[in-house]
Amino acid sequence: MLKKPTFLGATALAALALSAHAASAQDDCPERGALDAMYCDADGDLVADAPTDESLLKDPDTLVFAYTPVEDPAIYEDIWEPFIAHLEEVTGKDVQFFAVQSNSAEVEAMRSGRLHIAGFSTGPTPYAVNLAGAVPFAIMGSDDGQFGYKLQLYTQADSDIQEPADLAGKRVAHTSPTSNSGNLAPRALFPDLGVVPDEDYEVTYSGSHDQSMLGVVAGDYDAAPVASEVVDRMAERGLYDPEEVRIVWESDPFPTTSYTYAHDLAPDLKEKIEEAFFSFDFEGTALGEEFTGVSKFIPITYEDQWAVIRQIQKANGVEYTPEGLAAE
Image 1 (cartoon, rainbow, N blue to C red):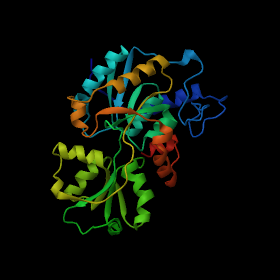
Image 2: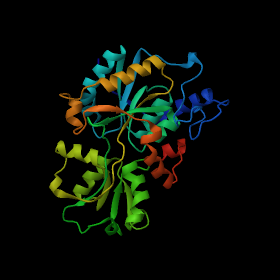
Image 3: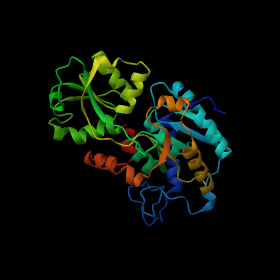
Image 4: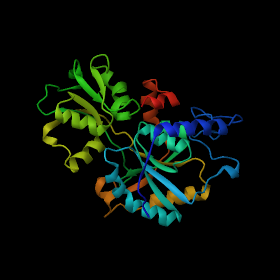
């Protein structure tokens, strides 16, 4: 049964995470790469290994699931209901939907052990992997295995901005510091297009792709780099008139939201969770109606599908630390 969503506060969860860190640091780990000291990566696949001590494996009676922060969590509670019912059926567990207020809160929730399954946005996914022990295993895709979204640069329909270089001297909305398409990708890609964020134009953080887009429509910002999948869904829900805006430039595709589980879940439970994702039929469900162009969850790995994102973040000097997450 779908429970009423609970909102996770980042401050309290951060305190829990610090205590968990102190108790669980793996000082004898042979290799962990960029992972926090709580985790180990002996097999070199860039994600946290399951605990070798079987007593540390978790098999909770209730699984907690969260989807990436959105403008109106109540809408997404209803959208995810058929999937959560399927997840309950396959795993034999109760499932609690948790609505999170920010990327930081979502990462801290899994880090503290309060979140078992989660969809993380593209940019925050590496923080979830390295700070929270999240293991990406699935992404929404089409029948032919294709997936992804594009960074799109929007301005008003009657704007004099015709190419990225025209952003010079303008007020441009980025979403948040850790966002891939909303901040890191523009900072990595725009210099080659003739404009440097924070040098050639003023960056204003809007807080979300939704707010960036609505700000462009309202004239609060001259332009905004946003994720195509987000603005497409906004248009489908009638949140803005596509005739009022214009795409100036768009990128090649990036991966979308990663679906992850906590590294320390029992192996049999992980298998059931994967089974639930990969056997779910989107057709005729609210989830399928909301995420047009996709029909199923397809298998992915963090090592392969997030390589381009790690490259963009490295170009931006991103470090996967609690301080970097707090800056979000």
